[in-house]
Image 1 (cartoon, helix red, strand yellow):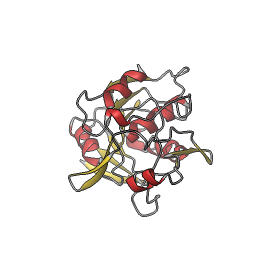
Image 2 (cartoon, helix red, strand yellow; image 1 turned 90 degrees about the vertical axis):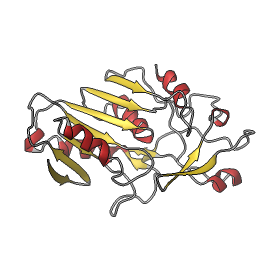
Image 3 (cartoon, helix red, strand yellow; image 1 turned 180 degrees about the vertical axis):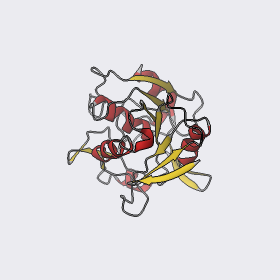
Image 4 (tube, helix red, strand yellow; image 1 turned 45 degrees about the horizontal axis):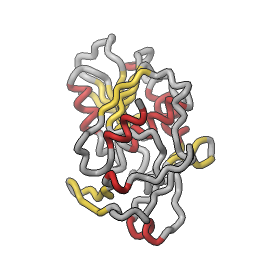
Length: 224
C-alpha cells in the first residue's frame, strides 16, 4: 500500500488498484486529527483507493471543532480528485457522527459532486459545537461546528435544563460527552435543520439502536 499526503489529507493507494473501484473519502467524528485513518486503511485493504480528511486537532488546523469551514472539505476533495492515480474515478464519502453531519451539509449545499455517501450515526440537524459540560450548564455562548463562506452555519443550541444532563466518558483515551435520549436538543423551529429537499446524492445510513453516546437511531430515522 502506498501512502501520500495531499494538503492535510492522507491518501492510501492499494498495491493492486482496480480502476473500476471508486475513491472513498473518510471524514471522521469529533475525536479529531487522523484517528479515522483506520477506516481509510480498511477500504484500501479491500482494493479501494481511500483518503482521510482531518479537520481539526492537527498543526495548521483549528484546535477545536468550532466553525470549521465547509469550504475546506470542498477544496480538499478537489485536490484529492486531481491526483493522477485517482483522477476520473467515481467518489464516495463516508462520514461518521460529526463527519456525517459535515457530509450531509456538503451534499445538501451541493459543494461536492459525488456518486454517493455513507452516513454512520448521522443527524438531520447541525448541533452546537460546545463540548465542555460546565460551559453548557453555565450557559456560555455556544458556537456552530461549521461555517460556510465565512458565516457560521445555523445550529440547534443544547438544552441544559433537561432533567438528565450529559456526562463525560472516556473511550480508548478519548473524552466524550454522552447525550442520552432524554437530553436530545429541544427543537422548536427549523433552526439548524439541514435542508434535504433538493438532495440528489445517493446515501446509505447506519445508526445504532443501542448507541451509548447519543440518540443515533432517532436522529437517523429523521433523515429518512
